[in-house]
Amino acid sequence: MSASTTVLVTGASGFIGIHVVRVLLKEGYRVRGTVRSLKNDTKCKPILECHPDAKTKLQLVEADLTKDEGWEEAVRGVKYVIHVASPFPNFVPKDPDSLVRPAVDGTLRVLKAAARAGVARVALTSSIASIHGHLETDNVTVYNETEWADLESPTLGPYERSKTLAEKAAWEFIKSPENASKMELVTILPALVIGPIVGTDFGTSVMSLKRLIDGSSPMVPGVTFAFCDVRDVAEAHVKSLTVKEAAGERICVCTETLWMQEVSKILHKEFGSMGYRCPQRKAPNFGLWFISWIDATVAMLMPRLDKVFKYSNEKMKTILKIQPRPIETSIVDTAYSLIDAGVVRKTSKYQPKKVEL
Ligand code: NAP
Image (cartoon, rainbow, N blue to C red; front, side):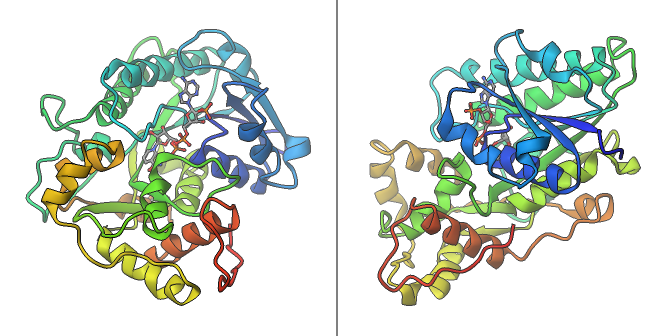
């Protein structure tokens, strides 16, 4: 990599985007990041402060996935693109197209502009949702990158559909004659991403942990999540740009699958003595059913009750040579960052700990 190698990161202001920018700057790249509005200080300020080199080596530009404007300029002169941006709401929208259109059309806008500009390789943020985002499971299978979510399944939600269709569209474009410059693609498929937040704005995935430490949940729903750490996710994106064997691969980033009760136990062990009440009892399913009528985030959990979804992390270890951080570290560091950022209140007994980025 030369000192002037520039990488475009779309969605630079998001939870994952900021960490990707930070790792790129740490590795010595120049970075151009897209945001929807340069006037949005809450979103732009944390990126400009994410690394000491941000002031000199990071340029922010405006571009929206739903519009053509800005993308030609955004890709000009860059060698690599990391396409992170995609809508990730914390509720299930009534109209699936509100997620599918920006995800699919936006991905094609970015890829087409990148191919025309002579970009060498694109790393696309997909999701385990595009491996097995539908909710039928035998509770034991470890799903891997050879599989695709079942688009015919009624249990595939709008977000999961948007990620699957966007990734499929990306692979189709890469194999099409329109990709005349033979630009390469690698897709990174993170599990539910947790880990330290930067700034006070954080994505949907960290919400699952926030509710276990902020005192708002008296009990824990009987659901599992496959987790991964945002620092591993960022490293995977950056490594995937230059590891030769990564080209043409789908690579899942996952630490392990835990019941939310296990997650809450880990939080209680670290924070219980500091005055944080992390719920330890499993919520009865019928109680959750009542709450789901008024709480959209609980409604999202209902189809997952009592189900186990596991995903392979073999390719992340063998191709990208990344060993996932211990899950306890990811969980505990997420909570420290939420407390330090003021998202969760500080108790009088709170003992801060330096979280390594
Ligand atoms: P996030 O914080 O909500 O970030 C989403 C990013 O996409 C934001 O920068 C957002 O811009 C941008 N975006 C959304 N709609 C856009 C549009 N129409 N035009 C331009 N930009 C748009 O969520 P995240 O967790 O970092 O997610 C980032 C990516 O990772 C997404 O592709 C998501 O599907 C994927 N992913 C996330 C997880 C997870 O657990 N977090 C797991 C697997 C995959 P604004 O800042 O302007 O809103």
